[in-house]
Length: 121
Picture (spheres, rainbow, N blue to C red):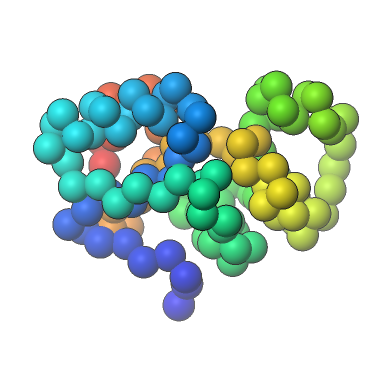
């Protein structure tokens, strides 16, 4: 069993408090009255197991959780191939480069592209 517990009764939202899309998504969800469990990835360090679980729930490889378009990524890193362990360490040490927000509810998982995506879950 994994480390990430989900419920059909609430949406767990992994997000960065610096992200405008995440702020808009949270505001939209609250306006719609959706029950949200907020997990700010800048304040709550995710474990390697949690990162692997999130990637698996989204049917992604761990490297696909890294937003290589993010300014922090391009300032600090060159595009390259790393091991799964190294991608995990990169995300843990630089959580702002993780693609987000990620919403989970029961067995459903989505990478939120627009704030209104939250109602799909």
